Image: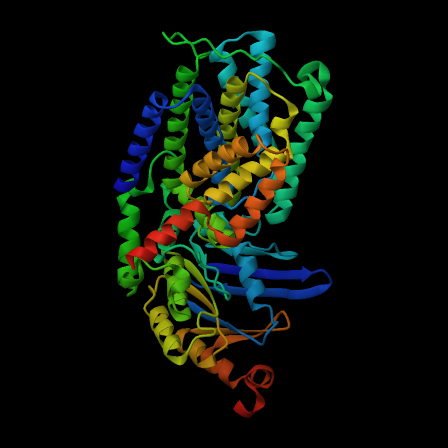
Length: 311
Length: 248
């Protein structure tokens, strides 16, 4: 545990220092990695801990992004209203969807979360007067905070995202180490046994589902400020699938792993899409490679190596 | 008062009748074996009592309280525990983590989200003392699936005991074990508190009669006979359908 706290502190120190050496372009890429790190960790709570493979996790990300975008553009660019509203909408939608999705298990859960996510995508695509349809909502402004630095600048915005990332990581780490989080692991391993041991399994899964939606919403909030733009692609299945891939690539059930997976995927996407259009194909290849050669993800691979060298 | 009262319980799977009008009453502290050939409905009976499936008709009472419609976890909190015929442990968790889950299941902190479990020392103390009591302390750090089948069975019994159950249902605790492993599991069950009411499904007649006070024989979903060990031993009908006629 102390080693974990120590390595977390080192990672945080590096992240705090990085703006000094990075170009503004690299810094914006790192900002994006952190945002998707939050998104991937939120999904890990479901997939890695509760054992619930959601293929519609973009729904909560996208709902938060649209909420913030719409409020900032059409109502008022007030951080203290828009930001909590985004989180609240993400939590509310996941609280609603959870009621349907948690009636199922395994691949049926995968299908229903996918279907529910596509419903939102359909709404965003079709309801042009509200969402701008396919064109999305352009030029969403970044919030103005009572700080000496403007968040429109790359470095202050990076630190703003970093604070959110550190808070989210800390909170999620606490959740997974809590009696609640440990019970989720038990549910992943054997639901029937947990019921017999006195756990109200449905309630645990439901709370995990809403919490995951809430943190996905946090990522969505940050991403709309980052990009200044929302479109239906935020609710897309490709978006959900790449989040799943980030979790699997990093190592499901390790929390930090998915954040690392997110950084790798965001970095690769950036690198590869400069040369070719077939990004989704690359995602597919990565998925195949991971399942074949590193089924427990990058973190699993590292642990395996460490274990071997010690033995 | 009875610890467990099963009153005219029936269960149909589609058109198939798994249990038909089964009634049993078990006194507090009593140990009852349920025997019968495969397909007699023994495990179905346990599934009904623990609420994993719901009966088509009849009632189940725990210490006088009607639990027929209560979900499984609520019954567990009333002091009902069970083991499974097919071991459904937490294969990838360590033995200690598994026992911690069992200890935590009936503890008020089980739903706490905002504090690490390591801050609740009483859970760990209880888990470690349980493992020490049952001679599994040296297995605490091992991953469950790496244990021998016999040890997994012992872990399963410890999980069931963690909540200090009032009524404990054991579904073939020695199935698939070697004679030596069987002996150690039997020894363990013999050591269980006499305050715990035990229902035991067991194929091995010697094991069953060794551990219990009373026997109920299930056959084709009905209670064929019920009585003391001697009564069951000398029952001709039971001998004919279950023990094999040469025992009569």
